[in-house]
Image (cartoon, rainbow, N blue to C red):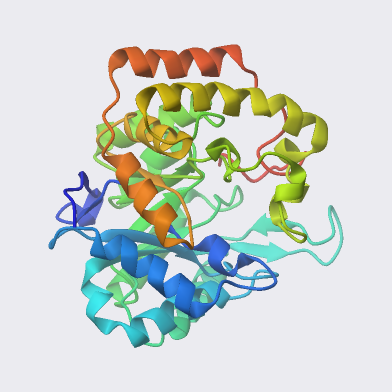
Length: 348
């Protein structure tokens, strides 16, 4: 066990200290063939065991973290705590609701449209709790996207009602604008806001959300700090992605964009080598340097990667090193949309 930086969560969870680096579980069950339980469990345990007593690991799952939006991710979490109940109190469990409805046709076949109606939110939270099977209390509940047709104030009021019913303890938000976060927080304290942050995802709205969260005392769970693995330098060509890997359809992984974006990876790798750390650790350290309330949220199913990621959270960057990273960002344009061309359900 090594010393680990910690972050105090916000809102009603302000008494909870979590590791500076969280653990995302999505890719363990997202593919058609999920990671075997033994490997997944060992990865989760490794991260928790590396923390001092009293510090929790923020673990992020979702109602839809399974192949074809199944609940396989939640079922994995339930099996883990069923087998290792002694880890229950050492985890702060955040779960995203699929507050979306699949269209059978219309605008886009198979498209997801946000649905924050009280009926859908109740359906989701009841499903999540049932899939956890009493093995672990749901600590934080958040909607994956902001529904433009439901005022955020009404959505938060619905979630507060679920807290009063004892379904979960804290409220989070995901992929929201800074002003939306402020409006939600005015109704009920928000504990965590989850947004994508990495050297190739650092937009003006990203900066505003991070600043607003700090002002309001809200923790930021910064997911995909490694650019879906691209920024680690371990993906040299599209052939390194297995068949069926969802990244194969992402814009930034399309051949011409892929070749162009490798310049960013190469520049980051040079800086990492000079620092005597891995490119992944440099990315995590940079994301963590954006504020004491910012929690890099990478995902991995391998013990070695978990420890590497945690170590990245302890890396201290000098102002000169931060400036060098910012120079890389300003000199290398990222090509391609975040996910698919025309993706519309991002900032809400």
